[in-house]
Amino acid sequence: MMKETKTCFRFFSIMDYEKEADFLRKMHKKGWKFVKVSLGGFYGFEACEPEDVVYQLDYNQEGMKNQMEYVKMFEDCGWEYLLEFAGYSYFRKPEAQMSREEEIFCDDESRLDMMNRIFRGRVIPLIVIFCCLIVNGYNAMAGHGGHVLASVFSILMILYIVIFLQFTLKYISFRRKIK
Image (cartoon, rainbow, N blue to C red):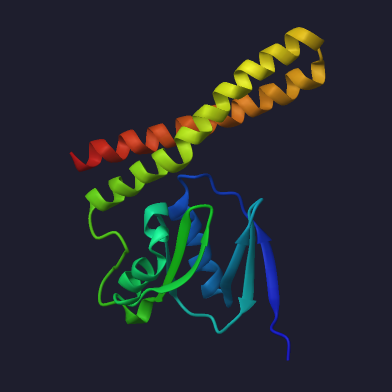
């Protein structure tokens, strides 16, 4: 018997890991268990009994280098490891198994540490790509004068600026909160 499956499209930026976890939790409450995610924001689900299941994401490429120990650490605390995608590890735990409001990050310092890992692993490479786009974009536009290239370049610049601003504002706000 084939399991009923469903695919949903949702876009979450690199700093929307909490919104992404909330989305997965809501889907599970509706009877759709998260099973995969792919490029472009396509989330795969299998039908299940509706249940309140908490989802958490961690960005820790260093932890994935020692995946067995990393996953074991979370499993020892009752979290089920699901998968790794684009540097993020996905975990879930039924709310009924939690003694209190529980998260994989037990304090603000560990949350800030994850934000620093996101900055090093995702934002810095985006800054490098952004700089390359600026140089190549202006050279292409100056050399060809193409309106299509100028439009594509402008859209990419706006996208990158939004990503940088979103991360920076969230990061600064969080740092102020914990000080």
